[in-house]
Image 1 (cartoon, rainbow, N blue to C red):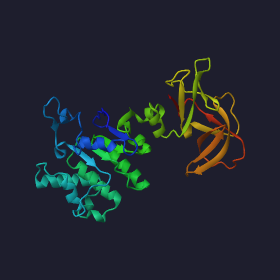
Image 2: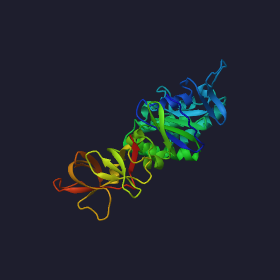
Image 3: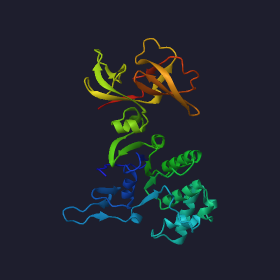
Image 4: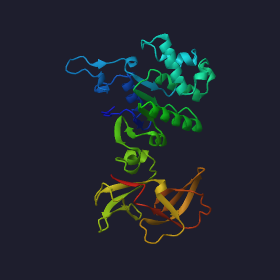
Length: 346
């Protein structure tokens, strides 16, 4: 892990987004106290939870149960021999509460996740979604200020995942939590988060709001990981009027976005989202970035189709509302430089 410097405010949900093995879960476990960093500092409301030893002085390492942090695991981590009530109560052990106080906290937590009527059932009698609700109730029962979510929805089917995502967001806002959410799903991260931290090989590539990250990725990895499936490389040139163009290798010259952080003469790659490319039967008048192309394939995705087109030695994937009926008809693609295109040096 390289240096990770992150501050999460109360009421904020921040996602750690990246591929498997990039350090997302390790970061979460260090915050929870389940793993020990080599160095650095972790604080909560000004209280030091961890600080590495320096200059021969003893460091600080508060045990997980005393950090005031709740955690929801990917595999639920529930006790199968206990009923729902006792699983949630387990998270309150060592909190110096009376039996009646524990019972009240468990009831409140189970009611929040709509499982109070299931309090006497064993974990094996519950569905996957209900088990994840129990895990969430256990994390919330001690009323933590921070909740850590380690890919909590990855084991659920699509519809249940969407439903639970909305419920968790509602609880996050109602309880004014500081939440840190680990995922490799870009749609999940963009749809839920106030900020997204893109990680790669133990490093933070970029931290930004979902809209800024989508529209202005700062690195080639961030651009590629966030779904820019089309990449065109070439040399940057000026068109003489102040605009920059990309002379694509063995291809056309494309006008680049006005805010591209590159200069004439640079070698650059344009990252182009499938939704930023239009497939047209006829070229529009007075439009830039119009390229003749032939359809070579398509895949159906329900509400939309992804069409593959070829121009010269290059190919592009285009998102269209309706499947293409005829592949033999020559067509044109329009790459709008004002949206869905980012250009990075290298």
